[in-house]
Length: 170
Image (cartoon, rainbow, N blue to C red; front, side, top):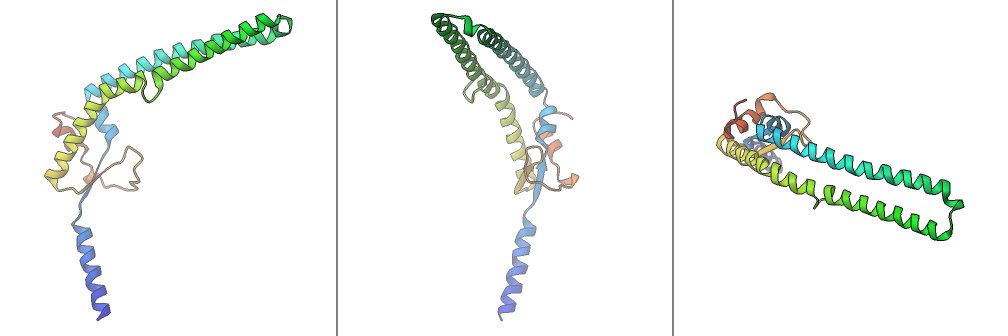
């Protein structure tokens, strides 16, 4: 009798598992196919590059000042040493503040990214949900974002369907 229940539960459990349908998307492929994303990414990259260059230039000035100070330190009076140290520390703090202002989790880059990219990601999510509901998928994985997707048959890729639901021709 116990064997009967074990076999029955095993068969029933397999039927439930087989009833679940899976699909995956490649969000990198989808994003690269959305013209607004490509433009937004280029704009963000240019901003980040400009800010990074500005910060690097500040650190170059700081490095030069430190180097000069270290060479001349033994010859300087105490007042001048303190003044130069304070100037270098001030420049370092300003560089760190600028870096934080642009690249922290609440910084300019993050906010601009939210402004430009989030609406596109929301459109993709809405389209993906629409396709998943329409085609009866219970689980949709993203193979581009470090999911633990080990293998996926091409037939399970609904990326083109998501683009179509967004009104984008591939």
